Image 1 (cartoon, rainbow, N blue to C red):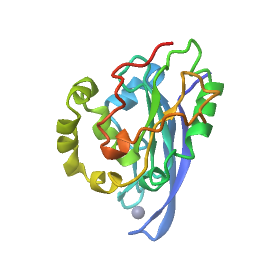
Image 2: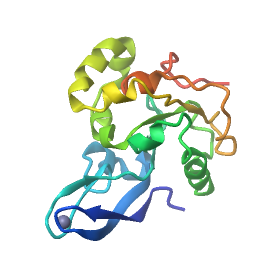
Image 3: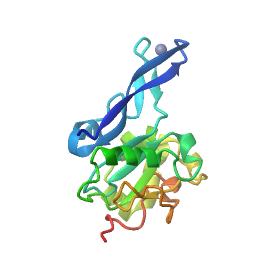
Image 4: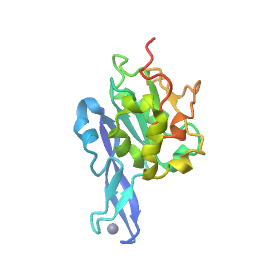
Length: 194
Ligand SMILES: [Zn+2]
């Protein structure tokens, strides 16, 4: 079964004054679609109006699966969703990925890292190993991309997946790291192994 999935996304294009619908990613599994993560295109964090070309940020949630990477589970959500602590969309996305077989073999033993979807292309392009060793510098470098000042005051957090899609609701640890800076990750630089 294919894990990566797209869904129709509808938004209001201001210049056109019309509703537009296009395909947006809901789950991207690097094992299947590394190409999408290497060079983000429309449908990853933004969409272009098919008539006037105006770009809009996608405000729906997106789960990115990257087994073996520093941050193997990224949950890219709207800025609004990050304001409320644990992103409400996390359980349903993890469940959908789990049903498709994403967690067979327990290859994801880290945490889900929430981030603003509009920042995803920048985060994907970064050397996260290096960011972990110098989070302050990473924050400074990302600052010009915006959103960070606002996010710093929010209660965004990580959801512990424990490598098992069936326990996405565990809220034992909700570090505020990502909210403080999208390039800042929990102290463990590698996925925890039981
Ligand atoms: Zn338009």
